[in-house]
Length: 423
Image (cartoon, rainbow, N blue to C red):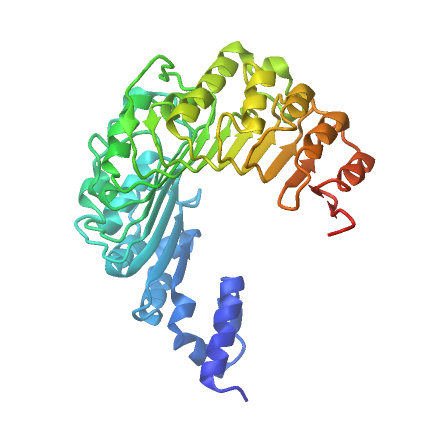
């Protein structure tokens, strides 16, 4: 028979892999039931996503009691059959445990709903262990006149001196920067809303004085997004950016002066254009100009970018723009370039073949304007062990082409990884 310590470790491994297995473990026999109840780590993850768990506080009480002094990771997803404007007993129980919460994720159908939950749990409560706070809103906002700025975070879950990651819905936004921003190093705005007023974000970004990682995701163009708006803000410690473009992502990022940028991801995907029909004209001239201008700004402001991802991006002058990227003129220390549905042409590959670039990896996914001849010319100029070429879904590149290229450099593909015979 296994002793209690060994059994507890086995249970911890099982629940880590599948949190739902806790119920099964407790139902095996009396010994397992008792051991599970005396293993605090098993109870540190609390997932509220069913109506009964909100209306009957016993589920929450059991987790709070059995978790002991172990910090809590809580995920709350409001079920469709539970109106948020009703009395929710579980909130009162969670309020008693704010001092133990390490991670709190709240996913709600509307801004009003998550504000009620944040207030109900954390109003006037310090959160000394809180490291991660994620607030999600699922429904799009169509009438901005009914969404006043919120003040919930100014008085809830604060102070939170250890908070490093904060994710907010991008509408509505706080009228003033909440105190939680003073410690965060990672800030994200994720929203299904497509009419965000970009300038309202700048005070929030500036309030995060230790900011190193920034993300912004929206569904489409911004009705209030003004490409002529300029308000350059300095973000001296910002290292990475992951933004949705075109529309507000570009308007936002081009106002950042981030000299320490090392990793930038731009995604121009739009749901209104089916994936199967993306063509040159689906981006439009205005988007190509804006995207090319942004890269030019990044070139002058952030010379230390080492990793650049361009998804669904069409540049205004593809031959010249991609030649500068591949040849090292744009970003002299660039090591990894990832292109998906990009309008990179063969000519850019051929003309940058002999460039003295620090590029160590080029990843091409669904790039329809490249051929095996262009890639062959490019890799001949980079035939060294550190360089990797990754190819997925490029219609003009066959398996035979990939095998041929692998005799020159290391090639990775979706179906296989090819290595030159000497490797």
